[in-house]
Length: 218
Image 1 (cartoon, rainbow, N blue to C red):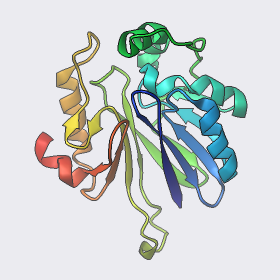
Image 2 (image 1 turned 120 degrees about the horizontal axis):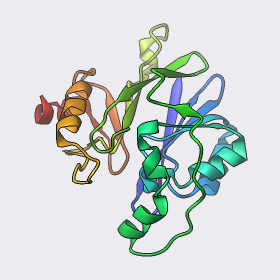
Image 3 (image 1 turned 135 degrees about the vertical axis):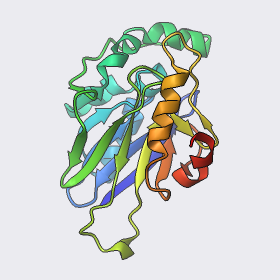
Image 4 (image 1 turned 90 degrees about the vertical axis):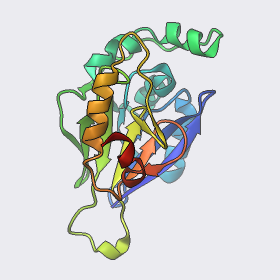
């Protein structure tokens, strides 16, 4: 069974998620924002075993904590290679959006290209990687589906970690030079085909469900 915890971090209030297998304690960190050390304290308190750090996309407010966590846990770092250029210019974009200079870690090498894999496993639990370009060229979402062998009475939910592709009541912005409104609507239509009761956990703000958002994009 998978469990998750949301940690809101930084000036842009980015949602970082810890996702772990209750049986094995293997953990995936999604979008570590800008406080890898703080995140590690929560991980250690829960006695989790970090298997990887994944980004939904390469924007600085989702990625600055990744290098610290990679060094602390010797874990693989996963991001789409399509967003590698964003990782390489974090200082520039951070200064633009925060209106101040911040200390930006050195470029982090991508160990797992999320463009090249379809799923990731925490023990026997599978997390599907859905390619959802539009907000950035390499945006992805992560979908978990309850193991069908589990008793439904345990109430395990279908989860979608949607990054900045889908929010409660709106979609991700596409006005960057590398964004694409056409592609994000194609990505959203793909997501709207998921089960209606799927819990959507976005990169900022509150959760929603596919059912609540479906009428906007179908």
